[in-house]
Image (cartoon, rainbow over all chains, first blue to last red; front, side, top):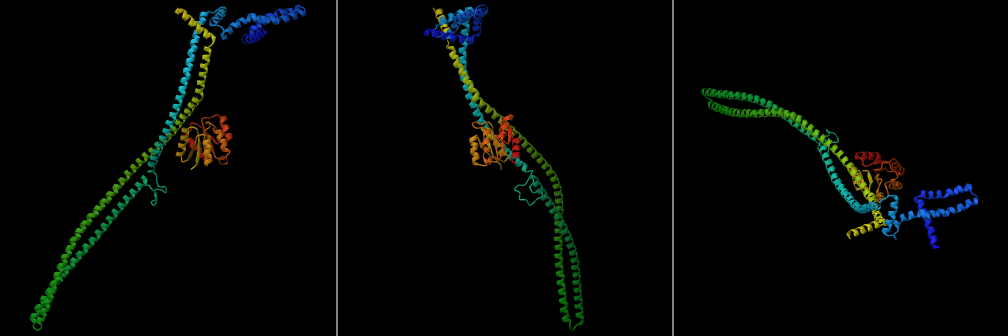
Length: 423
Length: 120
């Protein structure tokens, strides 16, 4: 009973299997069995048709049992562990013979397939290991790159800050005071280059003006000195007159003395008076001589002073003229230098803008690096893990496949042949 | 000096933003993810928020949504800086309250101009 149930269950399972794999085979069997019944329906009485229909099902099952089942039984034998490798090969050989294939060739091809599967297993195992190393390597690259970018970013920041300071310092030389260049009372902490040039020019102008004033003062002194010389000539003339008057008084005293000696009486008294007048005259003459000597001394001093003042005035005039010319030349030179400095600073400013542009480009480049890094991380996190999983799965499946009967049989056959050859 | 909160999981990107904004005179505070950003938001007041879209854990859109629910962040500009440039994502950002959208890699000059406009 149990065997019967087992057989029926086996047939149902077999029909299901055949239907799944070869539906056309069942269809062919059905058509073959239905054809006589179809004919009987039209020519035979109904009870004969009913009997035929009743017989169809057992005929169908018998057809499967004895015609189709053996074919599938041989095919299923590869999964049947109770069969020996030799039995498997015999069964295969029967089928192959029917299909026109050489078992020897198939054995060779299967051997090659086995070898390839073995290689594939090894390769997938190695690849899984390599991908694991690659994942680790990518992680290290990401970490090192990130560190490098952070360091680079720090240095980069330092460089740009210093460059900006340098540029601002240079540019401040060209900057005027906030209240304007003419604001002299500004309390600005620094003096710009144009302000410095302006102040220097103003100082030079003041020096020239002072020298011109000094020259004018020396001219005035010269005028006064001329007047003094004129006055000294007048005094000299007056001294001459005083001298002549003293001589004249002396003569008068002498004449008075002679008149007194001739007249007798008060002669003694007149002689005393005359002597006294002569004494005064002598004193006057001495005084006049002294005054003349002093005047000559003063005149000599005046001549020396005149010479010195004249020389100073000439020197001052020449200096003023030279300074004026120098300042003019200096102004031209300073303006030219100032323009050169301005051009240089403008160039520095332009370079600063270019540096800023380079900084922007570097920032964009670093962002590209960061985006690449994030993509690498994504690849490491998802894609490489999936690849490892797939490779491991493939490796496991290959390993399972290689355990199947056909390959075990092949291996046993190979070993058997090897042992035969050894004998 | 405007105070800006920068939220990005990439330290490099945060540094680049920080460098650009600090150089222009802004005060910058950094956060690496949603939680850090919320901690900073609870601690200080900000005039503008810059955030990335794709971050581990809660993303930029969730951050914007959460910030917009806070009274002190309801009206401040929020700028999204991301590699994402699909219109539907931008629309989703706008729906949760993103004020402006800049695609990475950003140009520092363009970023500063955008900030100037947003902070007016």
